Amino acid sequence: MASPPTSCRLAVLLLGVLCSAAAARYAPADNHLLACGAEAPAVLPDGRRFVPDSGCASTRLRSPAPTLSSAAPPGSPPPPSPLHASARVFSCRASYDLAVRRRGHHILRLHFYPFGPALSASRFHVGAGALLLLHNFTASSPVVKEFILPVDSDVIVLTFVPDSGSTAFINAIELVSAPEELVGDIGTLVTSGGAAQIDGLSSQVFETLYRITVAGRKVTPFNDTLWRTWVNDADFLVGTDSTNYKVWSFSGRIAYPKGSRQMTREVAPDNVYSSARSVKPGANVTWGFPVPAGSRYLVRMHFCDIVSKALYELYFNIYVNGNLAVKDLDLSSTTGFLAYPNYIDFIVDVEGEGMLKLAIGGLKQSRSDEVSGMLNALEIMRVSGGMDGNFPIALDMEYGVSKGIGEFARSLLCGFIFAGLFVALVMLVLRLRTELRNNGTSWSWKPMDSGEGKLAKAYQLVPSKADN
Image 1 (cartoon, one colour):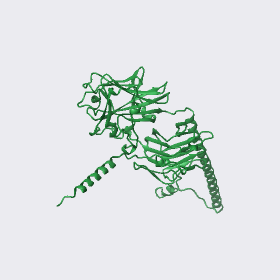
Image 2 (tube, rainbow, N blue to C red):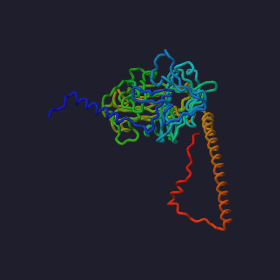
Image 3 (cartoon, rainbow, N blue to C red):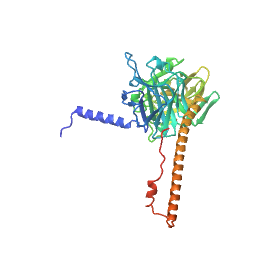
Image 4 (cartoon, one colour):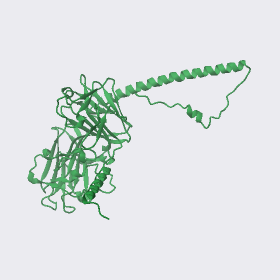
């Protein structure tokens, strides 16, 4: 039997690889993709399809006043993304009710693209449930705000509140279930007094500020199973002599511990672990990131030893804002293998100038004269428990008051109905007893067989789910 042509075999092999890659992609239980104000779906280069917010079965838009669907003015330059071609504009408080299939951590991305002067002048607040996410927010240029938040209800209420005399707007919304391993509960709190373990991180809300791939090419949502973007670190190197570090690129296979619930490709894609910047013994490599002062931050540093020829060759220190966070770090003792990814979460409070500095310091006890320590990627997130103490309460109470009034009105109406039925039933029984007595007939109540409760079930009162 003749073998198939080589081109056919290659096509079949390529198809199999593509199918395997597609099957391996993360499939979130909740995957809300909304193109706000759009009249037709918007399809991104990574294949995701955003549906118009006005016709989504699992989403409800609530507003006491009409909302506006706005499009980019004619003759304006083409938007950088299909999601930027339209927007939903609010003149008063409005909210989206997003149904949740699986509780737990979710990734929320809010897309803002002010394609007109009116949108650029908008000032507003955004909340999720009782938590304030954005306060006095304005968008003068395209921006995506990403949050990772715990969800313990079956509906997320995403609320937009315009500032007095202003409007609010949104171009697109993503709400995606996050894998369990994405958010850990334990980190290392770094202060001038030392480093100590801290827990309770899984109950916090995080706002992503930076997602960096060290010495590597930009990673787009097309190459990330959670549709994240990672940018190169070169612009953030500060006070570092280029002779103190070396850039590495790895073409081998990144291995993950079998059955591990902590490290998977959803934590970070292979691409960011395939590059690194190493430091020489006795030298430092430092990165600096402008951040809002007066906040607490989570710093996740990703490591994958792609530079060593054998185990136990690298020993280095980690510094967070000039304070020693980890002393004599040995990646081999942590993973037990080369090219095995790992990360460490640090918590730090930033005051003063609003600059977050991270550094790796090489130690001379390393076995190589050229390489002592390394870093593959890092993420910086602001820890948010509610940025304004009053607004989240007012936001929640406003929703709660309207909800309470509606429930009270429904309860009052039901009470009147039941009272009327009860009075009618009493009058009917009294009339029947009077007629029977006048006819000289006596009667009494007797137990009746209702067919194993079928009659009772047929008349069982089931409260309806009325809209608030």
